[in-house]
Length: 116
Image 1 (tube, rainbow, N blue to C red):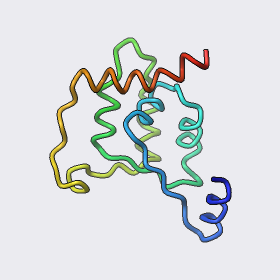
Image 2: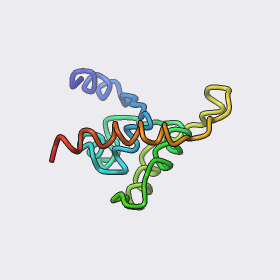
Image 3: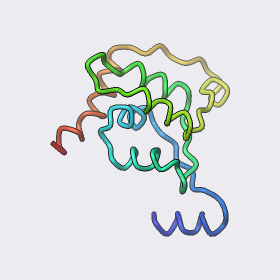
Image 4: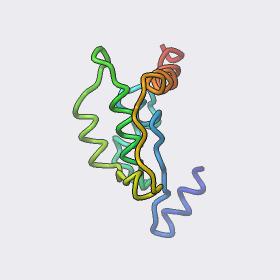
């Protein structure tokens, strides 16, 4: 991966990175140092993108007792290009259901428990 980054930088372009909803949630909850570093360092090596639906799923999966900081959302919106799900895929955004929330939270919190 390092070689790919070097080649992309030499060509004057950034490597593209697309964030899935579980990665967005991990960033918001602070459970993944790699994603945190990429976003916090302003994505200098990457062009970071996600769909508005992925952002919706991640924000909808945050619970009142989570250690969510609004500053993380602000930084996320500063660094990440948020693309329209409907325009890109040509279909309406599905409604977020509790089963999906639990699935995303299980993924986002799994690694955090291992690190502790």
